[in-house]
Amino acid sequence: MSAGERQDCPYYAKDGRVWKSPVQRKNDDGSTTISIGFPVCRMDEAVGDGAAETVAYLMNRGADRDPQFEEMVTLLRDLRLFAESMKAFGVNNCERVIARIDGAIAKLEASNG
Image 1 (tube, rainbow, N blue to C red):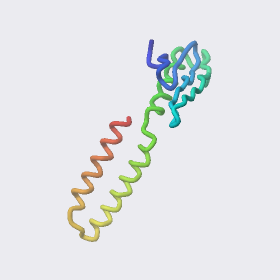
Image 2: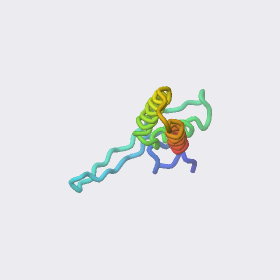
Image 3: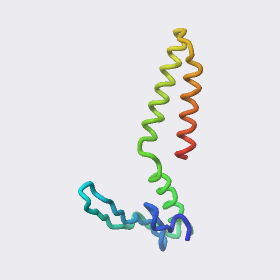
Image 4: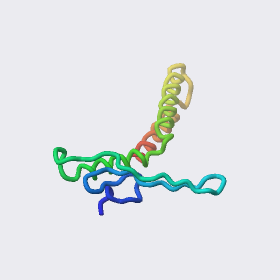
């Protein structure tokens, strides 16, 4: 069974269709909420064999991403611009700060694909 067909992922492929897996969540009050799975889309022969698996895989990659990732990268890039502007005014240690910010951005991007 390929990653696209694994029903333990948010999305999976089965019989040329991409499905959203059911989700079970524990609520703060101790109760459980269950959402049912449903078909997301159907691939036909025009897109070729394995297309549903590919779409499910790509959708899972997006679902796995930390929702705060883009916000964190944007913040770090803004900090980098600020450090660059401070360097222009002769503030010391900006190069070290910029290098650390660049390292943090690279680490975030590597960990979130």
